[in-house]
Structure formats: C-alpha cells, structure tokens
Amino acid sequence: MPKAKTSYVCSVCGSLTAKWYGQCPDCGSWNTIEEAAPELAPKALNAAGDKPQKQRGGTGAEPVRFSQIESGQQIYQTTGLSELDRVLGGGLVEGGLLLFGGEPGIGKSTLLLQVCANLSRMNKRVLYITGEESARQVKLRAERLGADTSDMLVLAENAMDAIEKRLEQVQPDYCVVDSIQTMYRPEMSSAPGSVSQIRESASLLMRYAKTSGCAVMLVGHVTKEGTIAGPRVLEHMVDVVLSFEGDNQHEYRLLRANKNRFGSVNELGVFEMTADGMMPVENASETLLSQRAKNVSGSCVLCTVEGSRPMLVDLQALVTPSYYTSPRRTVNGMDSSRIMLLLAVMEKRAGIRLYNQDVYINVAGGLSLSEPAADLAVCMAVASSARDIVLPQNVSVMGEVGLAGEIRAISHLDRRIAESQRLGFTKLVCPRDSIKKLHRPDGVELLPVDTVAQAMAVLGIRPLS
Image (cartoon, rainbow, N blue to C red):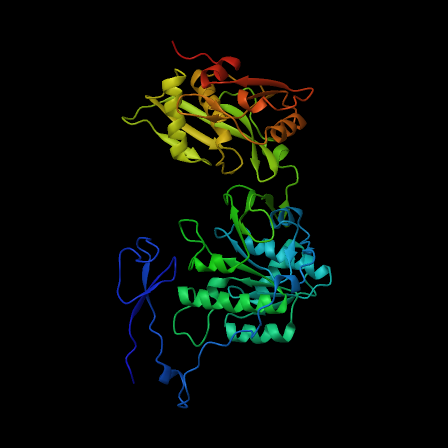
C-alpha cells in the first residue's frame, strides 16, 4: 500500500505545496500555510479493485448565442425583512448562492431563521440544514423568537453526500446551511472546516443551486481578523457576500454587502437585536440620535451616506491632560491612522495643542465610519472638547479635510441636507466647493467654509493663544 504524502495548504487561497513556507508562494499571505490531512491513496479508496473514482462530469451543455438566451426580468422574492431586502437589491433571486458572515453571536442564525419562517408563511418549501445544532435546539430557538416554523423542514446533518440526497428528495425552494465550516465530504480524509472540505462542500451546493433554481443561504464563520474562514475562493464562488458588523454589547447590527451580483454593493441594512429577533430599523438617524447628550462639549453630529441611505450619527471626542510620556490615542468606530492625521492637522493648521493631551474618539451606537466626509466633524468634536465649548444642538458638520487644513468637496450633499433638515438641524457646516451647483433649500442655513480654522470660527471655537 503506497504511503500517503503530507501536503500543505494555504488557508487564504487554497494553494497546495509540498513543504511548509512562511509566506504563501501564490497569494503572498504570511503564516497561512497549514498542514493538510493526507488523502487516502486511490487503491485504498476502492477496495473492489475498480478504477479510482474521478470528478463527476459536467452538465453537457452546448454553447448558445446571446440572442438565443431568454433574459427576462429579474424576479426578487421578498424575505419579509425590509432592511435585508434593501441590502440584497430587492430580495432573494432564484438559484442564488448567498454567504452570511459575522462574529459569533452577532445574529446570523437568528436572522436566517426569521427569513425561513417568513418564506414558509408564503407557502414556500424551505429546508434548514444545521450542522451545529440539533433539530430540537432549532425549534427551541424558533419558539423563543415567536417564529411560525410549523411548515419548515429541518435537517440536522453535516455529511454532504447525505445532504445532496435529501435535497434531491425534498427539492426545496429555499435552503439554509448553518454553517458551511461544519460540512464535509466523507470520501475526503481531511477534517471539517479545512480548506479542501469547505471548497468541495461549497462547490456541491453551488452546483445544486444553479441546476435546480433553489436559493441557498450559507452561514460562514469569521477569523480573528474579521475575514470569512476558509479559502478566498469561497467568496468568489457565491453570488452574494453579506457581513454583519456591530458589537455584541450594543443592540444595533449593520448588514453590508461586500459582493452582490444581483444589486448594489453600497447598501447598508440596520437591525436591532431584541428578544423577538432581529428587527429592521427604518428610521436609523432618529434611533442613533435618540440618546445624544445635551449641553456637553465634544459632541458633533455628522450626516454620513451609506450606499443610498443618509444617516445622522453622533461623533464624540474627549480631550484630557495626559500624565503619560506618550499621550494616548484611542479610537472606536473609525480608522485610527486617519484620526492621527487629523489630529496633526488640528495642531499645525488650527492652533489646537494636543501634544500633551489624551484624545479619545468614539462613534456612538457601535457604527463604523470610513468615508472622508466625517473628517471635519471629527476635527470640530476635538476642538469643542479641547476648548470645552458646547456646539449648537441644531448644527450638522460634514467635509473632507486635507493636510493643508483645506476643506474638500463631498458627494451627495443634497441627500445629507434633506436628512439633516428632516431631523431638525437647521444649520449645516459644509465645503464651499460642494454648494456651487446646489439648489439651496428653504429652512436650512448653509455655512460654507474653506479651512478648518474658518469652520472653528463659524462655530465660535477660538484657538489657544
């Protein structure tokens, strides 16, 4: 019997090598090469002495002209959750393969169980495949959520061969696999969760979704870096990649589309975790500002745009004297490198001395901001806290800040103004270049500025002499 050879596989790209490397020779990732379980020799796999089993054949399809393909209109099936439909571009698509990723306990299984219950009430045949829980555990969770799952089918199985047979028997309209990291192919000797197992299991589900028209939703675990565990090819195979963001200590969850072949990737869904499950938050701005502190320095309101949705968020800054050799810089909800840059601009261009001050930045509500329009709001919050001056409650601030202290133009200013006006903010500090072609609305006073120092003067914040 031939001896099985040890091989090594990259956990990011799935590349196979004969020996261990510190850096993957294909994708260049560091410390991602892991030892793979040796595959059984072909003779050991087939004791009858027959030829080794090969990969199954293709579909046998013939090439056709584009003119002969019936396109039709894309039909979306609503999930019963408006925020999820927004992120998906309208709803679930026939034959789609979706991947939901997020931290443990963020609400992935809860959300998909609610989706299954809603689809089941619409007389759709739904199959929930669980590899982590028993069927009884799934039912108990559904009862806690108050979800009507009486007509939904549950399968507690993680062997893909058995799952494939059940799929052919049941022929569901919609299927959930929780989670893809627990599935395995029995003929492969590697453990569940390995690169080869995840790749083969996802390939089988993708083939079934495309040939049967069943929409398959996968739950994916994430690594400590926040990326979906398994080979990167997993994200290339699926049609939609959705990721949950948020803190388990906060009640709000954000759902982003990192990839969507059926819609925009710029949409954002906001959910609230309650005892009844994940509830869509329709008016996100009002919810995020409902607990804003009043008459306190260091608080500045920004109108950010996530996809097509404008949202008002509360940016908070706390500047205190430092008793350390190196002052502390703590950032929550924004890129710390960008904050360091803005603090340097404030000291050099606006006269706010921070070299001996501890600075703490926080985005209230557990949100994460990445767009440059938040720069000016961060600067004004820091200046407000450093000078202990309370900003007016009816002022919203937005703009990108350059290294010279200049305020650069931002996009979607009309949407930001409309959302700010709806929530009662009548004064808006914004870049002067952004209002040149803008129709100024009634009831809102625009305060255009060119530099950070000018924005401070408009808000009544004087630099230290």
